[in-house]
Amino acid sequence: QKEVEQNSGPLSVPEGAIASLNCTYSDRGSQSFFWYRQYSGKSPELIMSIYSNGDKEDGRFTAQLNKASQYVSLLIRDSQPSDSATYLCAVKSGLGKLIFGQGTELSVKP
Amino acid sequence: GAGVSQSPRYKVAKRGQDVALRCDPISGHVSLFWYQQALGQGPEFLTYFQNEAQLDKSGLPSDRFFAERPEGSVSTLKIQRTQQEDSAVYLCASSLRSRGIGYNEQFFGPGTRLTVL
Image (tube, rainbow over all chains, first blue to last red; front, side):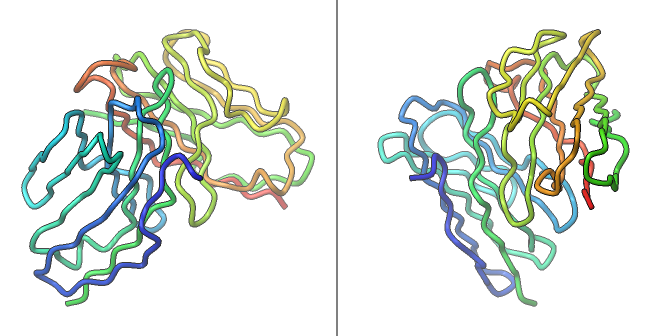
């Protein structure tokens, strides 16, 4: 079992819809969780961090964390074609390194 | 302000050559990380520095890989006797600290794409 697992995309949603991206992790002691967006040929860009159970909202993005279920999700409301990218879930481990999932490719169709 | 910078952006090496990749972290960031990203995969951790101290090098794939950060700012990742399997994007990230809510967020540089022929 991989330490951080994500939906195997690609995920395709119509413009204006809600995109839901999911991630599970294996280390029950993890405390810090991050979502990165990566456009093709570019480096990962931090879009959300979450540390406690519940929801955290930032504009059109909502991160959800459930430590009991070892589950993190990212919701993107009113999806735009410019949201089309690969979304990486990352969990902080050990002295500070990030363990990444394999990423979910999101495609928002106009 | 300036983000993380890396150079070169692209590097083509012949098998067996040595290469050196440079990372300039965000000013004032104590923690610096190197990751390797293969095509279609998430980044994989290589090594971590807190100031000039290399605290974790558990991800370095072989003794051909070496990293340093002698003055606690700029870091260099060196790969000796490159092999084709070293072809990847090498990403550098920095954070203000390694712990603490709001302080441990890692910001990535643009990466160096290494191709070994």
